[in-house]
Length: 608
Ligand code: SPV
Ligand code: MN
Image: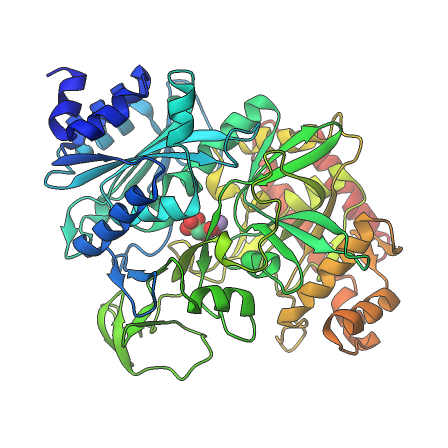
C-alpha cells in the first residue's frame, strides 16, 4: 500500500483533499506513516473553522471522554486513577549512539526507544478516529512562531489543543511545502471505560533529532497535549541552537503608580504560585506557563506560547481568585479535569463552599471517606485537578497577547517552595549573579503535580529541569550568553511565598505577592532604592510599608519585615553547598557558576 493510499482509505474525500491541497510531502508522509502503523478507523483533518472545532467538542461528548455539565460550554474529563500527573520516569529522550545529555535527564538509545514505541503504536487506534491538528506555538506568522502537527486518537486531547493553542491550518495552506513543524503522535491506547487502561506502558518519548514526540497509554494533558510540555522540550533544544530561550514562564504586565505597564516573566515549579501570581487583581496576564524570549534591538521581548490556561483548580475561590472564579463559573468553554461532579456542577478542594458528601470523581462514584487501594482517603477532587480555558475568557487578559513582536521584558522572577532560606522578594546584583544564584539555584519542595512523594526539596533550575533536552551546563551557558549584545538586561528577582517562622507558620499572606510585584515594578523603573545584602538587593522597610498600605490597605510592621527579610545565614550557606555539590557532579559547568557562588559564600561568611 502506498502512503497516499492509506490516507485515501481512511479519510473521507473532502478530508483527503484538506491534506492534499497543502502540497506538503513531508506532512503527508508523516500522517500516512502513523495512519498505517496506528491503524485508526478514520481520519479527521481539522481546519481552523468553528465547524471543525464543534465536531471535536461533540465527539468528546459522544465518546464519553468528556461529559456535559450544567453550565453552557462546561464539560468534565477524567483521567485514570494512576494517570493524574506528568510521568517523569517514563518520559525519555531518544539519543543517537555516542550522544549524552548528562545528569538528571532520562534518555534511551534511539533504536531501542523507537522499537518500543513502534511496537506500542501498532494498531493502537483500531476502531478509533484519528485527529490531525495544525497548530502554532506563539502568535501566528511572527518571528516567534513554531508550527506543529498533532495526531491523536483522543477527542479530549484534540479539544484541549484547540482551546490552548492558536490554529494554523491557514498558515500550512499559505506556506505549502515551505513550512517547518514539530510533530506529535499521541494515543490514549486501549480504554478501560473512558480512561487509558495500560498506564504501566505509558511512554512519552522525545525524538529531538526528528522534532517528534510520541505519547502512549496516557490522557493527562501534561503527558499528551503535544504543544504544551512536549513541545517545550523540543523548543529548548531549538532555542539553544538559535540563540533564544524557551522557558517555563508566565508573562504579565504590572502597573506602576502612573498606570504604565512593565512586563515581567516568572518561572516557578508546579504548585508554587505561578498562575496565581500572573493572575493577581489589578494586573494583566499575557500567559501563565510557557514563554519564548528573543533579543531585538538590544532588548528582550517575549510571547506567550499558548492562548489558554491549563490551570490548577485546587483552592481557586471566589474571594482569593475572583478573576479565575468568574471565568470558571460563567458561561463559556471550560474543560474541568479530575474535579468532582455533583448535580451537574464541578466542585473542587478549596472552592470555599460546603463540601458535598458524594458525587463522581476520578475514582468513580465517590463518597466522603472513600479510600484507595493503599487505604488512603481519596479527596473529593484530585490535588492536581485542573481547568482548561481560553485567556479570552479572562477580564484581566492583556491586549498584547497576540502581538507578533511580543512584549518588552523588564524583569524575570524565579520562585520555589522554600520554607527557610530565601526572603519573600529580592533582586540580583546583575545578570550573571541572577542566573547563577537565583535561576540556576532554584529549589522547591515537591508537590502533587508530578508522580512521586511530596514535600522533599528538589533542585529545579529555572523551574525547567523537567523539560531540559540539552545538558544542564549547556542550558546555563545559553542563559549566561543570552545577555550578550543586550543594551538593557531584564532585572532578575527571586521570590518566596512559602517562608516559615520558628513555629512553622507562614510569614507572608497569600495576597502579599501583589506588594512584591509592585516593588519589583518600582525597581525595574529605578524608582526606589534598596538595602544591599550578601545575597542581593532587598526592599527597604519604608517602601514596603507604603506599598502594603497602597495595595492591600494593610499596616506592615517592622517586626514582620525583620522576620521576613533578616538574612538566614546558615540556611543560605547550606544552600550554596547543596547547589555547588550538584554542579560539581555536572560536566562542563561554566567556571563562572562556581566563582559567583564562591563570592556569595564569602560575602555571607563576612557577617559571621
Ligand atoms: C505544570 O505542571 O507545570 C503544568 C501542568 O503547567 S503540565 O501540563 O502537567 O505540565
Ligand atoms: Mn507548567
